[in-house]
Length: 465
Ligand code: AMP
Ligand code: ZN
Image (cartoon, rainbow, N blue to C red; front, top):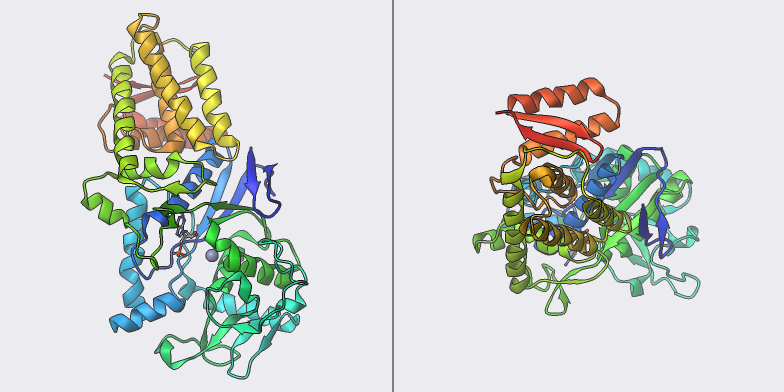
């Protein structure tokens, strides 16, 4: 497997720290509003990454934080005249609903920043003790970039050439403002009742320290992959890396993956520009989660993706084509199944997964899927295939969908997503050689009326009656 690592600016082979396991940290939403589909481009890319890793046999521990205290959430709560918790709670809930709408697999952990203030304080204490941080007159604590020569490594800033401009207390700032950034912000009247006690007085954490504390708590000081949108590289990820490595003296994330933006009319989709659609806006206009997911994964994650309604219509048409093929295959499945897929289909399967394992090339994988549809339709039209390949092809579609998660969704084409999920979980158990667990999934499938048979090309499903 190979990924483009922002740290080295090159595509490199992926080797996890511990064989067979991957620790993955993905910057989650700032819960001051509904997430827009630009944000979901990032979460869908991360979901594809997670699913590709799992398909390749890795056990993934994914942590996605919820930023529920920062400049924006505090401002939102104040404007609404409610407590921070009352303000962020509905957006957290909406976020989890939206993840389901887009068939994004749940992460293993969703730590909220407000539940990890103690860990942040500990980290800041270490940074002060080691001399990487200092207290300001007002009771805030800042990270001193001059004390950490490796600062600028991720974004490739030459700190020797740039003159630091002093201090920034805002969570977000530009590269031109190379400056010491806040780890702890002393209470300000604008913060209202949002404040915690610390050895430096009452205040609240800066945004960047939140992700350092939560990633290292769940994944350890050094972990495999850290992801986010490209706008996170500076200052957020640069600052996270600096604080974490300064505190532990160890490398932080080993691979940094960033997705390019979802754009509208040439500009980044963003709350501040007002050019955004939430998932709810689009569902309200009659588009489905799987159509939106399809659009979001149709481009390569490192290329900007232009959002248009034409793209949504094209997604609908493309999915209808695959649905039709799935139905055609399903009506044939179960009759005289052959153990092996035809060589041409095996080649398509390889093309599909090779593409995904080569820096997550979803456009190439979708092209392989449509090659399968075209090839299968042609072979069935000409009588070259009878029913003997149907089960194998159906299982291949399910295997492809374990990553894409756009087929068989919200459509009753035979084995539904619950059944396919059980098959996938049984496969995972088998890969881990947990035979009792695998048998448990076989029994669950039988209860739901499906038999599963293992073949050299993967599991095959058959209705029990
Ligand atoms: P935020 O809630 O602003 O912290 O953003 C959550 C995630 O969405 C981060 O990983 C951002 O980098 C990402 N993001 C924000 N806007 C876009 C966009 N237009 N396209 C892709 N990713 C985005
Ligand atoms: Zn983060």
